[in-house]
Structures are given as structure tokens and as C-alpha cells.
Length: 115
Figure 1 (cartoon, rainbow, N blue to C red):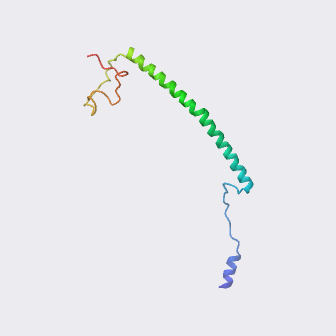
Figure 2: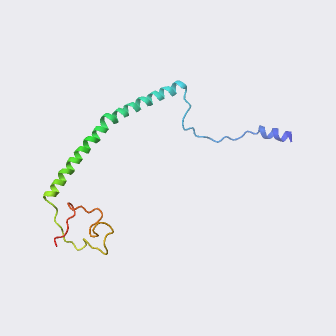
Figure 3: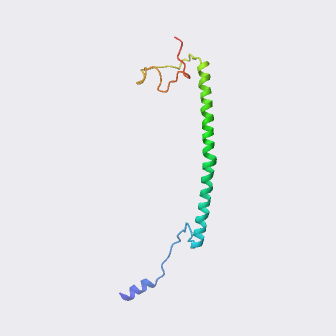
């Protein structure tokens, strides 16, 4: 039995290839990579704070002003109702509001028929 165990230990085993996703770095290389990552993170933090955030705020203000002008225009010149046959088909009342208008009805943009 001892001879069989000795023979089993002496047979070379097959090692399968294992993919290494990252190499081991020396301490100096690790610290250099960490410092470079910190520098890049600080750069993008500054870009975000001093460029992207003010740009978003500026475009938000512009979009709000444009929408307010559009609402004022709709108040002075509302759209006219077009009596198409496929509009306002009601099989039963809506379960909200007065039952005749949709949930997202807006009297400025969705005109009622002239009755």
C-alpha cells in the first residue's frame, strides 16, 4: 500500500490554465497607480462641480423660461377643437374627476368641443 501511495504522489498532476485578471504589483507601483487614480478623481470632481452642475442649472432656467412663455402663448391663443370621429369616444365614465376628461387633461392644451 505504501508503494502505491508513493507512486500516486510521484505522478505529475495536470494544472489547468487560470486567467489572471490583474497582475500583482509591487508596493511602489501600487502607490503610483493609487496616486494617479486620486489625481484623475479630483480632476473629474472639479469638472463636475465647476462645469456640469452650472450648465445643468443654466439649461434648467432656460427650459423653465421657455415653458412659461409657451404657457402664456396658450392662454392668449388656445388651440381650437377638431371634431374628428375618433375623439372623445366614451364607453363608460372615467373613475376620476368629472368622468368625462382623462387623468392628464389640461384645459390649456386639450380643448373641449363647442356645444
